[in-house]
Length: 145
Image 1 (tube, rainbow, N blue to C red):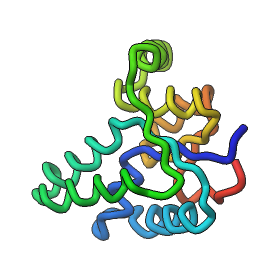
Image 2 (cartoon, helix red, strand yellow):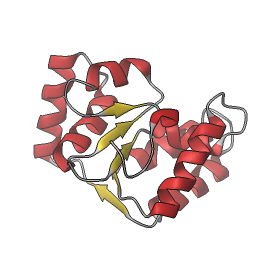
Image 3 (cartoon, one colour):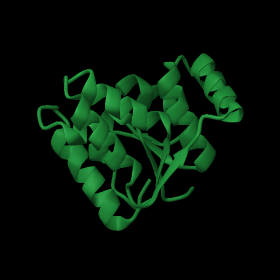
């Protein structure tokens, strides 16, 4: 397994949002991942989800877009397009493991690239754990899966 992480948008948004319960653990995780230059592999969908969560959910469209752009320029980041092959893989994961569509895309990316999934979504973590290593931010130490 590679030493890489696929980070769900829930973690990225929480790291940006001080009012979120998991803010400190998510922010610390991102800081450590960036410091250690650990690869991050995200579906391009993450950029849209971040902008939407902050722009729509928090009523701060300019900040949502700015943070989404910042994430898209993280060092050691690989963005993966949702091409037909990945879409089919995510669809199979969604159907077999009863995951929401967007959650299945993150799991498919993690599986395809041998990355550990990091999420705040308990259902996603539980259902993905039979496919990929799946952790909460506070349980992750870069360099260890």
